[in-house]
Amino acid sequence: MIAHGPCPCGGTYEEQRVLVRIARENGAVEMDDVPQGRCETCGGRVYTAAVLAHIEAVFKAESR
Image: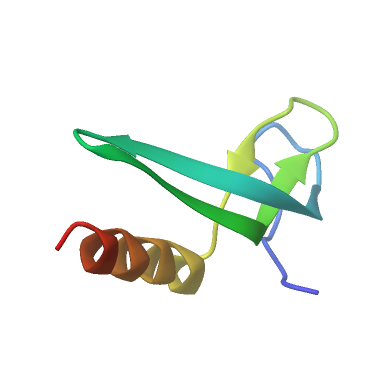
């Protein structure tokens, strides 16, 4: 479980696993089972810096 901290609305982020799909000119990059924090109060969504760095690295590798 990843700690996402408190949401600015006062709610709490609960971890869920999601499909991330990034569209690009010649198709799309998809990653399944990506950890995401979702606030049960307002619906806000966040990713940790490590997860964002991994998504970016995969996207760059697939764009070559």
